[in-house]
Amino acid sequence: MRLVFLGPPGVGKGTQAEKVAGRYGVRKISTGDLLRDAVRNRTSLGVEAKTYMDQGQLVPDSVVIGLVRDKLEDPGCAKGFILDGFPRTVPQAEELGKVLEERGILLNRVINFQASHVEIVKRLSGRRSCPKCQATYHLTFAPSKRGAQCDRCGESLIQRSDDQPEAIETRLKVYEQQTAPLISFYETQNLLSRIESVGPIDSVYENVTKVLAAYDMA
Ligand code: AMP
Image (cartoon, rainbow, N blue to C red):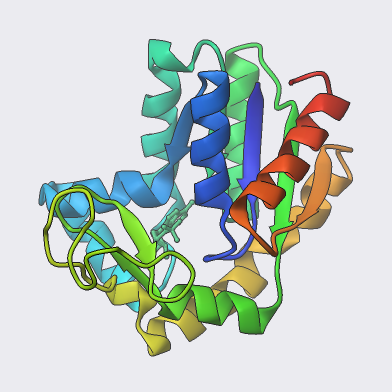
């Protein structure tokens, strides 16, 4: 199983990637998570990336491509992987193609998750996360039972700096300009499947598994 989960920020692709990876025992590779780890650990890469991330801009292609290249070397990826939030530009997609070709493997499918602009803004602006254990919540759709504290570890929840209104607008513009062209990029390679990412998480997941089954992956 070698998949790319494509879609605007906040569409729920990370949540779905987590579920699929857990169910099928494949690796989820989220460049957003890898970059946030680097920021938290104050590595030189993290320091460079933080300015872009806080503003909702994309981190330079060379940085993220290096991260993904390293992760794909991981023996844990042998059974398969789901790329979540990568590629996000055409040059990243082209580079990914080269990296996979070097390894003699191909992508099986690219799943494009879609939802309306209004829905996405609602999801991003209500998102909260735990700075300690990285659990994520939503004020309305998936609130913590302990209010402003994390259910898992009790830490006070925070709002990601790039989930502030101004950064959300920038991220959605960046998505339209730089990432949305990947839909036709993968469509012309006959790799694209589309999923409406609306309604309960489990019903979206069911639609994901239908796509996987249709391509002999489930
Ligand atoms: P995410 O959690 O996927 O929404 O990513 C959070 C932020 O990390 C993005 O707004 C970008 O600043 C950065 N980022 C994540 N993935 C990429 C990527 N593939 N290319 C460039 N920047 C990225």
